[in-house]
Image (tube, rainbow, N blue to C red; front, side):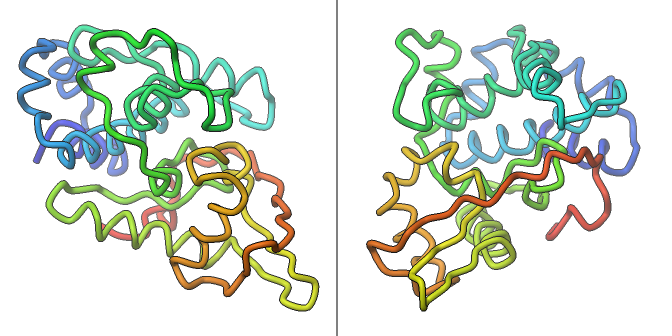
Length: 233
């Protein structure tokens, strides 16, 4: 088991985390790059690490995610160290997992000068990661332990699991209601046409190109790892 998945498991079960956090911090960038040379290994690592770090951040203090400024601090503070580099949740999500996108750019604005550390350890954009990351809010997807060998199947399962609960299509009015995540990261899905196609790919709703898209409000009520948040181990 790699450090990221072990950390996530210990966070969920209330096990020790300090030694694992120290090991992650002490890794040299060269060693980490070698360990994460495979793209699927790298993607699973960052998914598990984000979910573990998010829960640890929420457990450090009472946090109300309904407050926009609280969210900005939670996601933006570089409170965790990986391979001697201080990272924030934003650094992991938008840098490593979204291939150096600006967090505010809706998926259309890349970072102009990502660090060498980020360039060497990021993965290509994959819209399914939005249904695999849990920041502790009520509307976040369920959490799983991601494994490189089964990652493609797991990401498809996570996406379908979330969309099945959150997407609705009014055939008479040709209105597709989707989670706010699609609006925030529109460019990751290829715009509104891409959103309709993406949803149809997973067979959740038979929406047609040209359907009107409505974005559902996001529930920012804070929750810290309820048992039902883990949909699959």
